[in-house]
Length: 81
Image (cartoon, rainbow, N blue to C red; front, side, top):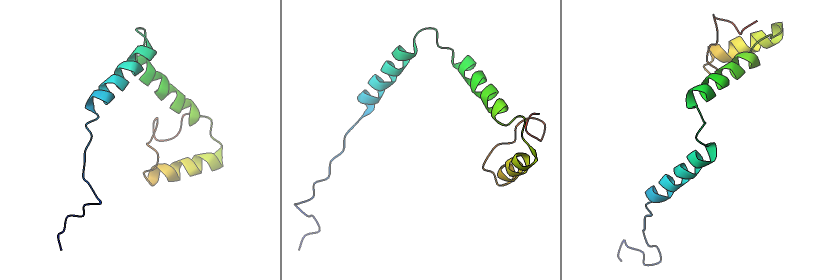
């Protein structure tokens, strides 16, 4: 008995061209004024706000998540006040 099963056919699909087209559409949708550096800075500012003004219990949970490696340490060792 042969190890090749005629009911199963191996094939592969190269999606490189489709991926390049997808990326082109994404960049077109973002427009010429999109600034990736500004977007990244805005994201960092949003995270700083997210972890700011934590009460004692929230700060304790945040510190536990940082210690466990779930969240990165932000600011000078504690969430921004």
